Length: 282
Ligand code: ADP
Image (tube, rainbow, N blue to C red):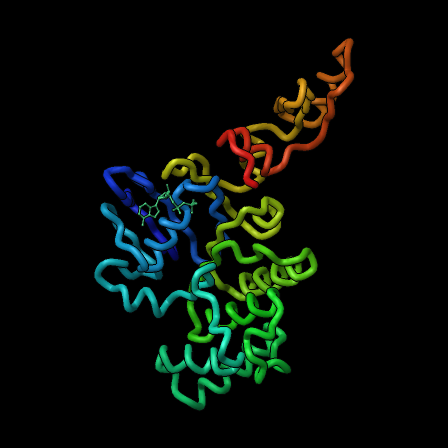
């Protein structure tokens, strides 16, 4: 059974489908990345999955529960780290977790144990008494993750989990997310960082204009679109041409009489994303 299943899901705002008959499945234990340019419909899709908005049409199941008819059961099965649901800056680290634990009716003894365990996991045990407003950006994000895990969800939703973090903190969070996934957690994340999706995700869904325009592993994308790339500078513009292999790209270069301004390299997710959407992400 899939951890998350969408069947013909649409969300219509002002007669415009911002999510347009979307169907896909996230498997249990999978790390799934949703990529797309701004306005593609990623947030609306995630908000529909986590019961924050109702789809106009279609059906969504999360952990075997229907988001329309069993929204409480869905909420109990998921942990959510969104940009908007940030932690309360005027409470301490511990108070934030305590509050969340009470909201989820976790009995006291169990609650204290779980708070200790997850604080240790995200390396914030020594900051338990600190006000959240005194924490760094990386610490706040780790606290959000601890909070999302406190009620032991089956599926974790991470919306742009490392945005605004320095490379070191980003790396640290990646390792944490990967470790959680290795322990069996299903993860759905959105990101603007191609390296993040390349590093973390088993499968990638690329959205544009409310539709899923590609779905698969990076290896599948590369074998479909090409593993080799020739980049040519034309005025102030770069033009890319895909080749099945790096070798084929090099053979192409060798065949040219004028090789000036042409670079050959392996293709990556960003190249494929730009080819598909015509957009640079940042
Ligand atoms: P993404 O997360 O990929 O950037 P969104 O899901 O946020 O995309 O937005 C998709 C489209 O839906 C955008 O054009 C946005 O303006 C529109 N949209 C999102 N929420 C609303 C809303 N509450 N009312 C009207 N339009 C909305």
